[in-house]
Length: 404
Ligand SMILES: [Ca+2]
Ligand SMILES: [Ca+2]
Image (cartoon, protein in one colour):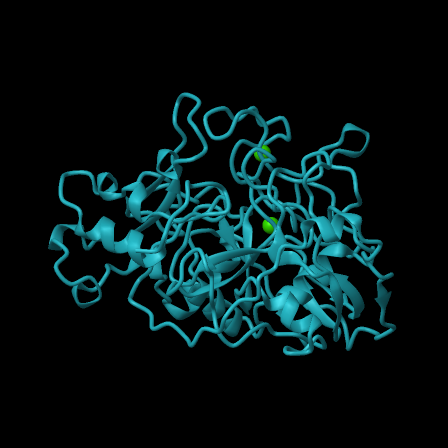
């Protein structure tokens, strides 16, 4: 077991360990089997793997604590240079052309700014220059309607719909090897934010068709983003659609809308002129959701103003898978020229010191569960991460495409 500090929003449950523990648990309710001892959480997310993954070779991390350096530094964001690449043809349906260019990726320590939260976001530094070529990007998160067409055409079965295999969880009681996924289950009273078990549960039968469990449905929610999607599910959809997942550099370039160092996709103020710009969380997390922004859960796409590139919901609503493996030192390596900074695709291994051995890809933008009390990753430049085999009811994706 990884050494664990008191749980906080920088931590998330170990996918493999959580899955293993759940599946090994006994008793009528599978969620009882989750215990804090094997949880490592990150932001508002949780993980359940389909199978044991082999861990890529890991390299040592530099000791980086540059918070004070960043705060006192004049180094920040160099002006974004948007390329003049014309779109190579007419836009594919519901996509927009991003001409690419050079921009400063990452974020400053957001602590102290309104809605900035209490996390230093050290893995989003050093801020450094990155260049990306032009690409098309979906204007919205992939919707249930879009994903339904994919499933109808291919008969694709998502990870959450497949029962865990006994060989992947040796010794687990057969009755625990049931298909399902992770669902936000808020307590009815305030709870310390140190124990994520109080608002997450593994729900048998939860999947993209039934995001909150077997009784839930998407029948009237075709314009909502699809959720309960593992990384490989998103990749399969993208391939079918002739698209791919964005790199985190592409995602961030597009989300900044041509601006420089903006805190949010729309600018630097969370609610300019009192207007809600994204679906996040208001109230005391996780028990009180005042939904002042209009939605207590996921919103249909396009309910808030788009950014300057016409992208909706890049911050908030649902997290969005990106193609890159997660490592906390990716940006340092890019800055050091140990990794490319032109069309960067991230490291070739995954490593999260909070959960060594768990394979994670990048997720971006935060979700309807994000709040400065717990996870402020609606702030641009911040980086999320998710265990690759895990879905959740606040994780979705959008796609990119290079040419028509
Ligand atoms: Ca909301
Ligand atoms: Ca989003």
